[in-house]
Length: 476
Image: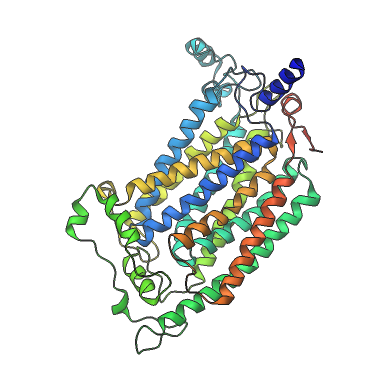
């Protein structure tokens, strides 16, 4: 009896960390599901913080630069903790060991010998190996998600929190999940996986109907604001929507995070016409009088970018195209996540610094100096980067264990973001019965889709994959 209990405990332990002393890797389906659920919460929350800051007047460029910094910090934390936990092996080197491998095999023999001598004290026994093909896949993945996140921050203003994430998440699942299914050698159960993808497709069409119905509701509310009726497609009187200006004391104070938080809760009654006007006064991106379907267009572009980042990361860690030379280990999920986050940071920082001086969407010009002194809401922006960084890392850890197609269940993040949108931002309050019915149908389809994707989760055969490049087994 005691022997059986000990064996069960050992088996349970090995599902989380292979061999006890080896590097920590999530391997079991249960561990993968826990990672995916945590990732779902994190990735559904950080866009809500973006929306909160933009609606109360902070420039998106400032918010995104703060976010980019802590997003990279999160990857470094994951790499230096989980990536260094346990003993590395020739097939699975620790993070720092593998970090020094990239591209050194292309150096001259004398320089190779020098580097071997220099880094011998670090036990980098496997350092002179060329894994640049996998590194490039990881870097490319970071570029795509940086462009997608950048587009998302503007789409959030025009289309709203719920609709933006519904469109981007659904496109990611439809395209990205299908690609990952074949890259992972059909590890997931197709008879369950693709009906789940079908539910996401249905959710896209319902989301479009929700968007149209909600816009009609808003225009109807605004039509009663003054004697002059506001009809769909016409500009609202500009005197009602002059830009919100901060007071000098607000600009100079370094304790303005408290101010943002207090203003966040001091607002007109949600769902009323006065609430919509007050919101337009304060927000950084003015949306009244502009094409409401611009947000859908930007959301679709973001969705296309998000569709490719996960398959590229899959290629970085599993080398399905066999680009690595024989004997060169695959990138671990922690090393690939680090490269992914570095490229994401570089692209985000470069583009947003440019947008400071050449803004889009009618935003005012800013500067690096203005950004550095803008403490209004900075702690919220930094928190959003940490949430997104840890959320991405958990998604990749779950995908490496149960297949990246199943890990795309995190794209159900509209379930989390819609909760924040309704409870905190007052979206859909005082809306029509038709809007509520459509909204409920949309959320129901997402719940069904997530359940199907998680049930379809497979199990990656690590030992076979390491010995033969890529070998996956279906989870019966």
